[in-house]
Image 1 (tube, rainbow, N blue to C red):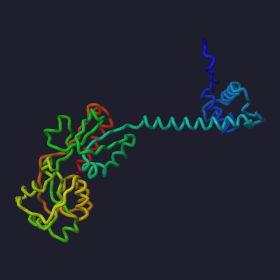
Image 2 (image 1 turned 90 degrees about the vertical axis):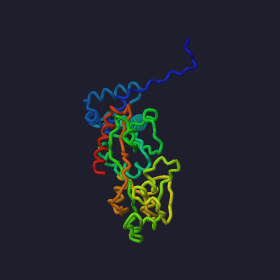
Image 3 (image 1 turned 180 degrees about the vertical axis):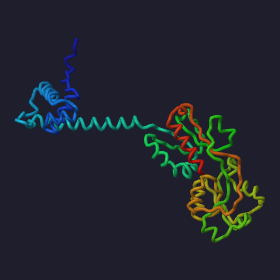
Length: 307
């Protein structure tokens, strides 16, 4: 038995009829509306007639070689124009979202801040359809579990994995601001005793290649006592302090390449420690077959060639 409390909804006109009416009302011409919609004048005229019959009111006054909206037509035009504009905007947004290709990249905070982000505009200009999302974290994230496409990791080749793409190695050497070097010259490593050394906070000793102790041992001055030390939890903080002239830091190539090129930092010694570690790009299993992932890794290789 039909529920008498349920109201029967009046069917809405089809979208084609609304589009034809909106164009005709805006242009006040069936001919011009047909040209805009790639229809004949008679086809548009039939659409308007069908719409008027469905609504039960006249929407236009047909005059000799002219059209005018009736009062009902003016009211319906305001509503239909707003509805069609809303639908077009929503359609454009959804199509734009569907056309963009998300690319989730994970790396360390220092690599993201000092190397990747300053260069990233080059990739986005060449690939405007790719929506790059950077996750900078000290933790090594699981690409498959966390839904990530590419990881840029630093470490020995033995831990990188068989499908890792080597980007570049890393050297470690002292760097400081030109003003600091001018005020207190560094002619040889032993002169570091007159400087404040900027240190990386690593209480568990997981990053020995970033410690001054390691570099001083390679330089054969393990017993050197600096004028002071400043300790930071993030490598990008150390670089900021070095540029500001707060002390001497251990620069990591290629992370300090741009700072050296801009003369914000200088390297007083030619000697460097090579910890036999490198940066690798690793694609997830899900992302390995995607074009945007391959394009991004290829771009990383091109950029690393100049590092």
